[in-house]
Length: 181
Image (tube, rainbow, N blue to C red; front, side):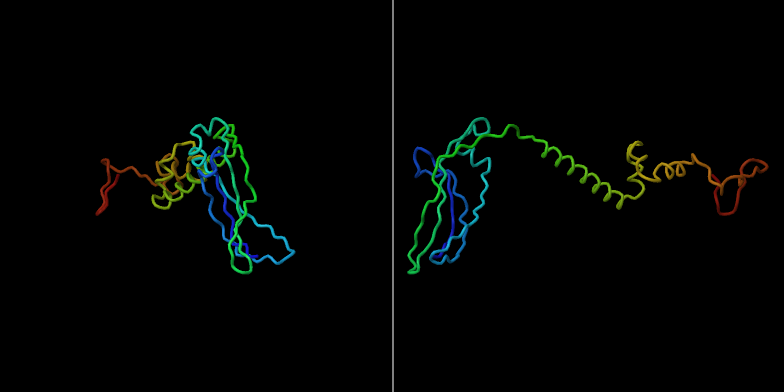
């Protein structure tokens, strides 16, 4: 036999001919020799909107549906067949909370990574101005930011400027081509 594929569906429990959701057909095309057995994986995921189509209160109370899974195959003469290997009423139970710890940790990680990337881009574009725009507590975290800010504002005297100021007669000394500030 040639197993051509598997497909599943969710149906109305009271009227099987009414389909709520058809799961994607998965093609296999595997030959199974006489006397052999083969196992096939058919992963599927039920989305919240699929259950909402069945029961508008699916997030608050249990939802009962008829689930059917069928395998499609052909014999050596090329005749097509199908067999429903699972056909039962199943109950979907809502989760306790939409916000769980895993979601919150993932959100915190993503926000932190996003902030770091945003700052790196801002620093690459704006340079030192990006650090200066940060609040003081965050500037203290960045190595060298506070020292550079103090030097830029003149709060720290450097050795090159110490003792270089001279008093001149009559106030300001004028030099050719340069303005003294």
